Length: 60
Image (cartoon, rainbow, N blue to C red; front, side, top):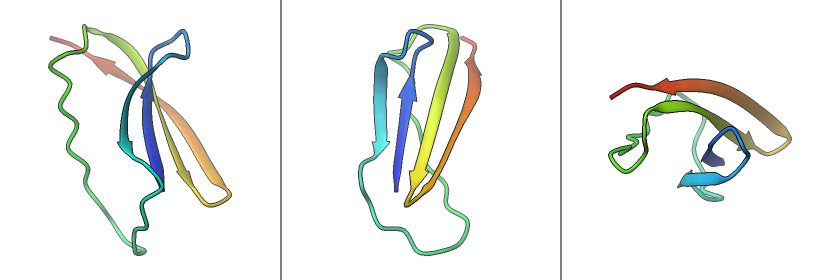
């Protein structure tokens, strides 16, 4: 499983998970975003063939 954060230009801002194995179920990931400015970011979750990209808004 891989979970990465991108800015709107496509630049990777953080990698929260890198090819980690997770068991089936619900998981929580803490994201320390102090170094990122307010704005809109994309997060992409990849698990095997499954890929999902969603948008998030960071407001300070």
